[in-house]
Length: 316
Image (cartoon, rainbow, N blue to C red; front, side):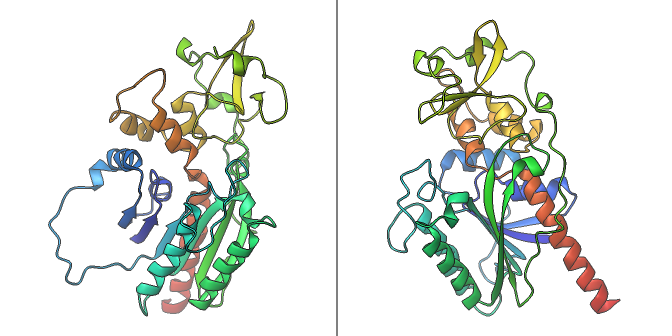
């Protein structure tokens, strides 16, 4: 059984990935500040979350894999790019809390640490903190490697490029070259054939910028969607051309599908909300803040296979 620690855990993308590829998993702890994301996570994994009285004596905080995706807003081009200097109290500076948590584990440390963030984390303005993070992980005994991975390379018709940093305890670096990748699927497999009219674009501010470029724009989805954001109904936006001058937004379910979640995952989360207004906004936000599940599936396949191969080589 693989034991994981999910920091800035969102709605549990890593846990879904391990479940999908048939790896027994124990979530030692899950940390998330967004109460609504916690509500969705609990609903999605309700069958595995039976309450049990525990003693703190001998409590095991020894995950095999630590996953963190510290908030990206202060790194992102779409945000204010405030950065992540330690002590700056920006949301993205919470990445340093992960370092402190690993330090406080003492002699025992997770074998793997995976950190996901926006592509802009490697830009000229943000690279100092990124390099410092890598240096801190090296100080703790890890070897680092990172790669920009696009959801389209893992079967999802969504243009979403993110930096994945994998730190391995010891001197062996993680190699991204042989990750299992999957041809991008047809976007029509993800879209509803008959979305309700409530998703139609009605705002003049959006209708007037369809097909335009620049800050105020609405891009028409063709072969793939663009990056799923926390809101769909404001520019820059992406819309579906329904013909006869009618356009609509992606539904909450479609956004979850485009991040690799199953309809069962979505339905479990959706059941704990009552729609207020036109949309269930927490579900959009949770999709926009999530990490594509199939990317984790590929990373975990390689990690688990490596661990299995090493164990067989050691013990025969």
